[in-house]
Image (tube, rainbow, N blue to C red; front, side, top):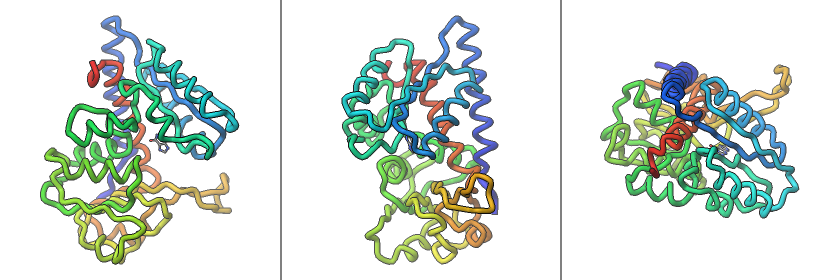
Length: 293
Ligand code: GUN
């Protein structure tokens, strides 16, 4: 069993981007600029956004955080999006999810200029990705592809089972793994809450991607000997032994599953850290106008 070390890889990716930012600056170019809109005070979102902003500082990006109260109307969020769409200094921006219930996430995602949509959530970016056209690929699937590539894991011809059909992870992940590309060329199965015999389907996976958001749901009974297991879960569960009062749990019961695998991602220290690498890479692409010109 080998650990897929998201911490190590994300450090490498950030170092590579930092060098490129320095080269851009040396040639008189402007700093890539990422903005984030955060609505309300969801604890996990606060942590994620703070970490995105900190990463920008580390690698020499400019960053802007736009904070709105959780009572902000959809129109107010749309107005902030329009300002960022029109701001020539902002290369890319994200609206952190989830949003309060009174705001339509779909309307918000569609309002972002696709050329600045570094989360890759706009239907135009999702559609372009499906067609294999240049597009921003959402950060978590992007990070997982990067992980498979950097560990030189051969995926062609393998059976990849994705558990979870979310717009952010499960669905794009499945599309990317079936592409005629490397990583890719898998036979892909998408499972979800209505899948009968889930454990049996998962046991047929050479590559198992768990993105269902249920802590420690995937036990040893779901995993084939020698499988590659990618754990996208990151749920806060109360833990009185921790100073923070909570522990972060993945979707995979790591201790019993790990010995059965050939490769596995830890939580924390796995996919979560790769996600930021994806977002920063997309922002660099946006600043170079590499996708939309
Ligand atoms: N919430 C959880 N993951 C993400 C992400 O990748 N982007 C945004 N904007 N919100 C999220």
